[in-house]
Amino acid sequence: KNFEELGRDETLAREHIRGLCWDGGQISCPKCRGSKIYHLSEQRYRCPHCTYTFHDFSRRWINIGGLTPAQWVNLSGHFAEELTANQMTQALGISYNTAYKAMTTLRLSILAQALDSRQFLGRDAEIDLGVDYVPAPRYRPTVKVPVFGVLERLGLVFIDLIPGLQGETLFHFHINFHLRMARMGKLVYTDRYKQYDAMVACGDDSLPYRILQGRKEPPAIDGGKHGFWNFAKKRLQRYSGITPRRFPLYIKELEFRYNHRNEDIQPLLLDALCRLVPDIA
Image (cartoon, rainbow, N blue to C red; front, side, top):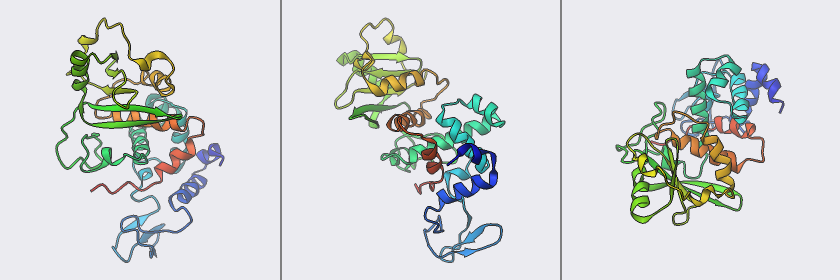
């Protein structure tokens, strides 16, 4: 598809996105998945089974954020090019808050496609992403600074949320078990641990960063031979103001980007945006 053309024409953009939403052309209820529907006026539908009234984009990520189809096409292209929220406001002529919310929605749609998405989006999730349009976990999260394991094999990387570990636990391992550890702003990362090439966490002022001052032995992942870390480190250095709650969205985005590093990811981004928001009740 010519995405530049779609980005200039709302009608073409809407038809393209509508086709992604109804892959194969079969319209079904996004609430109960019923295949029998009634056509109403103004491009709306009603399900006779659950009586839900909906339109083409109902209950999909692309329906969050208030952008038009052409704006979503353009934003997905700029996101693929790794523009920041500030740069996005200039490129699209929208407010910073609108750009930031749309980019967060896009990151959520990426996360929702991950194999371990329910660890982040489920009602039993151990962490809370702090996004008002995604249901919070059923129970109060016990982990404030989540820890992720980095595992790269055969050119693919897997970023695992390690259950039960807190950011402060990494400092405990460092002090008492001599696990090598380094700091990059609010982000800390370690040497190999169990099956993982490294552990990484984005902290806050509660972490004792001063312990790492003057440390001369960097983690092995800093040796320059780790494909994902070389890819991710320069991108992580560009991020500023990331909170521990939102860091999972960024690290899982990097997992996605790395695993599709030899592809044009704009079609993949639009496809993710057109998926149904998962039922995580």
